[in-house]
Image: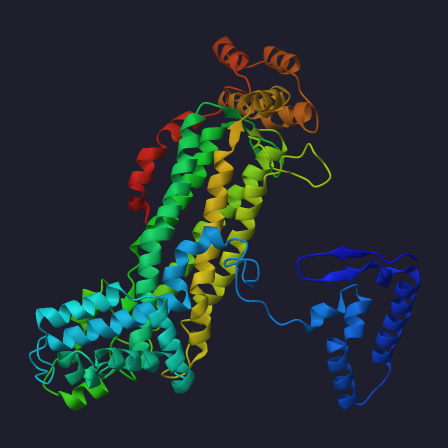
Length: 541
């Protein structure tokens, strides 16, 4: 067999290795490998076999993967090599969160809290050892915070390699930077004064969430609601065949059905925005033990609560070593409810598209299917649905795990809370995808009207209701016999009305004028009043 080579940027793969004989040989070897695992072995022999099996180039090659792949070193981090899709495929869409939730972001917020605490101590009359800072020194501190960059964060990480403690590394970094500033060098031992690491951490995490909610999450939620509201207003009078249990039901309007989602989302958004972010600065077990041992005459609870408020947070007076994270659970559960409504809307929009109620605008160059050229898939709503699900899985664990800590503190929250950015990132992807999907659809009024015109049986509801009003015997049963499981036409339905006994002619005239297109109740009024109801939503909370 002639051997040829396929040349790539990094490797050369010989096609001669893909001959029929090599495939057959590899298949036999693979069979032997797995049959060996099935034989009864001692525990150590089995463990050794599994370890060797996992790392064996033979097994990798037999799976069709080049042997070199198992031997190469891990590549440097980039959007192509990142394990998390938030830093990889979706990196450009999630990059705004990097300054907040990345390791760099966390170090920066911790540094902010440490510096603000030192500045606050300098303002206290009861701590004479830390005199008020001069304007020049205050400016040095502000410049340090303003200019904090990745190089500063990397300095902290290098110190952490020695300390094996991330918060202590920040204290040491600040001490080093303060050496050349006499006022600061003189009080360097008051950096992290009376604090436990969680005093710094809990305030940093609260500030991360505050910034993310204010600058990213709530504006994105508002955009989703505004997009739905605009489409609701534009389609307020567009009649729509409702479906309950997937079957034709009493008609509504497209605008009203969209209004349902906008109103539900606004309620959850309002509840999220009302949640107060809590913080503590009360020491190792929440009792100000260290504070009072050094300065027993200071009302530390009042002082520290004022400090927490100065950061834009709300003090929690009752804590252990950690702030209990109950407010985080409230926040994440509100976000989950918002996401659940988004997911519900995604599925409805997907379904409306699938039955032709919406047309999707095509974009030049886009491909819907690798094999079916005609496809225009509702990928944005599918992407939104998927990311909302992932976000809720993460938020759900955060909400149920973070409030639980053994005795006065265990460390399980530390690793879990580092996924805040992942949860928020997948929320943002869900919202942006839903927005993109909404921007690419146009109502197909002709398709909706055609569907209504083929389902005249939905008028059985108003007809039997009018019959009840005039005390006609067994109205429901008569309409059931006439319509259930049958396709009813305009002509047959109007003939049924003409043949009715026991109702006045005026009522018959009203029924004769009724069609599936105009039997929509107050759907138009509901859609048109949406904007005002969104303003008044606070009254329902």
